[in-house]
Length: 390
Image 1 (cartoon, one colour):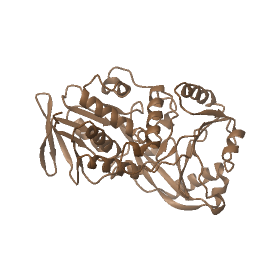
Image 2 (image 1 turned 45 degrees about the horizontal axis):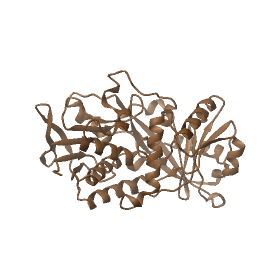
Image 3 (image 1 turned 30 degrees about the horizontal axis):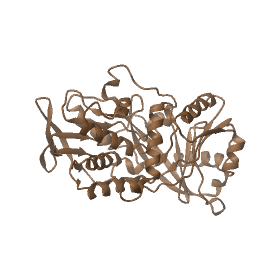
Image 4 (image 1 turned 90 degrees about the vertical axis):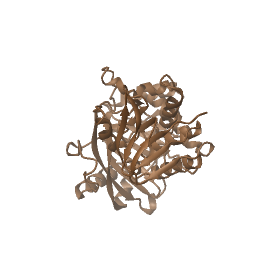
């Protein structure tokens, strides 16, 4: 086949996944990254691989992506650092009906999940205290992966297939001529292109705005705290998405990453370049208190500080992955929030298929189509606090 001049903006997990899957189809895209691989929001992700979504189409994508993470070596170089810890999602009296309906729907999709009583859940993880919970969704085959390792593995795979990833090259504009992409302007000069894919995360929006597309995406700050578990509780525990108290607990080796599912008012509408990346003493104290309530053994854990990432949330908390209307050859994969690390293998594969085979290909991507907001077809935001969980 004849390859085309394809430029991908951004070398995060989405950009490198798209590059890998294009290369597997015979294309040789050029990836431009203003800093270095994994320098953006990917490295700040918690790395949860859950399948619990309200939307069945999204749940099916998460199911397929989990299978890929578990069989990584059949497809790609390196390792994503997948660990099958299982994922628990708590429910209380106000949320149990919704969680129960989700579990029933997931089972029809072939997702291995069940709804447990709080007592039954504690037989799986006896260190957890589930006061106030009426039920727990349990995904035994789900777990966590290493976002940095995953991003680097995609980059290594892409390079092994002949993809050029140029680090330290910032794209400053996307060039158009007669309604079609003609190239990109960069910090090192102009590069001609037949196709441009904007996967630059938070930093991709100004490039779209310059073309007249002001996407409904905002940025929010999400701080996290890291606690080293005490010797008597050092073993891995499941991921716990504590919807009942708006917190999460993620195992990272001998440590537990603690954060808040929702967003504090003062952390909304932040600037991705100037937001506070550290955590305050008050935030550390709040997370430590939450952790001790669910995992009493963490009272003896050692706090190791924390960090804050950002989510780029679309108006309906789902990504925008599609060809850009009125701009032949331009595609975007933006508004991915903390939601899409787990979907990165399937998003990269589907968008690559659409680029190669045409707009009617990869119909699963229609869920994330560009025009849905203008059409008044935004997706359901049920369990909104979960929709921005990495």
